[in-house]
Image (cartoon, rainbow, N blue to C red):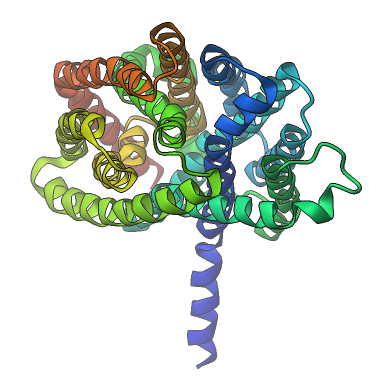
Length: 444
């Protein structure tokens, strides 16, 4: 009996890191969705143009692109659990600062630090999973991590809406000692304060004890050697994803603003509605995405997630037609839910694809390259939509046209690049797997 209990405790301890990652992901998602919900309120309070509003996201992309590779290098060399602790504390401080910003410059700086702190842990999480879990356990850990990231978009929107509703109801008790407090400011400060106990929770992970075989790492982890041989495949993979992220950043940054302008909802109401619809869509997307990858991986191997993703790109592009035609908020939200289902379904195995292209000892660096290209991909979309919206006029329909003009060509670009690089991706993955198996056999 005691042996069985001990085994249960060991099993629970093994899965502790992934559940900690899930908790951090959930809280970060609430913060991310909240920022989208309050964007129109921020625009009005600070008197920003659409170009300035879109420019905030682009400034963030530039800052993150410059710093994330350095952070990935640090996370490969130092204790990753402590790195997570510091990132969460910085995120907490920056979130509270955003809520108290007095001008556009402070708004941009604090938001840049928020996104930087969130983005810095993406290569960290991927590396922790790859180091701590092997074989079927790694697939399951990736599933849990991806499900958390996908499902919390809806959950984050719903909780963000509830937080804004609570903030509006209790604003009167805050204004006597906080002059200039508003619904969105209180919500951001409260979210920031949550980060303090969250950071303390990371202490239960203890020291970072990596499971990678050190002899294996010494032979195949030298980044320069790896990059000379396989860097082109890594770049091709991430550049192929760029169009999708251009589309995602343009759509995510402006869809909530379009809904507020077109249908006259409050941010709190929008958050709860969009959270409900997207939450359901993401649940279905995660379930069907992993059912598809599990079945097709046996038939197509590493190519399965790529074909699934290409299918989803086509589906997402087609959803913009009914989005433009939607006459009610619920019709729009339902189509948006279908779009999110397709995105979640298609991206269910991004982590597996990136891990297939990496090797022990350089995983955080490879994920860092992905974060760099992703960050750069997030720069043009929001700014281009803002520029077009200001040029076309303030009519909500013109804003929707701007979103479509940016998003659809970007999706087509990703589809074409995937088609052109499918063969080279497969060859690289097969070579890396053969090398790793051979080195493991030598190491015993």
